[in-house]
Image (cartoon, rainbow, N blue to C red; front, side, top):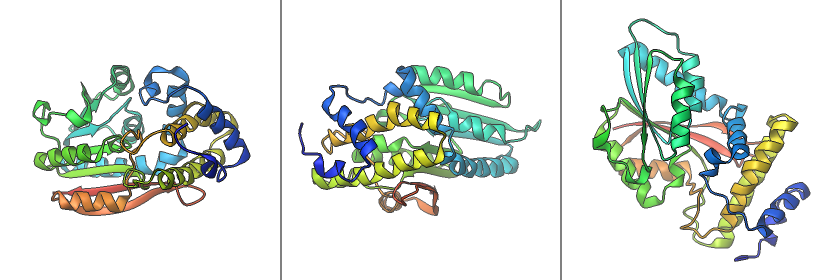
Length: 290
């Protein structure tokens, strides 16, 4: 064990300590790809994605898409880290079909399994064309995109990139010159904290709120699946990782804002769409233009 986790575990509830400690002692390593490969992990993530936690975030995206498509009647959207398109299912269900509107979504993801499910999930929306592209976001070549996007969106994906790769993808999006660029991310700092002890305490405060929030906002059966098959493993992977090895490289919205403004974007709006029960776990939205 690389670090002494006693200080971190003392912050958690007894139930969480027991579950987390079992995972610290175990040899299993959490990998983001399990979200699509392991059926239990995938189901836990699906429950989270369809929970009340992301409801307001998805509604915000719906409002933006609905306004623009009514104005322009044709939209090309680039989604960075689209996964199975769970957000788009919610959004498209609320957009009223009109004869003269066309919506095209190009979805980037590294998982064949997710992209295959994406096409299935969105196939019933006849006015929406979907182009799945398998690619790692850090190596995305925007010259290969089928069309220049009107909207670029990333929901809970860019935090998996190292800072240098965040900067690269933001620069690429800037040169695409979309009408709108939306980033949805957890408003919390982990990547910028160099000291391992402080980073682990910061992560523990965040995930304590995640655990408590999931318990308070989902029913008993779902909360156990979400925590046992996803969030406990994700938290322990942070405790066991070096700063550069973090899978969840969160940065605060204020840091996102500085990076985006430094890259030439103009921030239209910054808002918190969800706050956990302890006021630590926050999901934020940045809306910007060139």
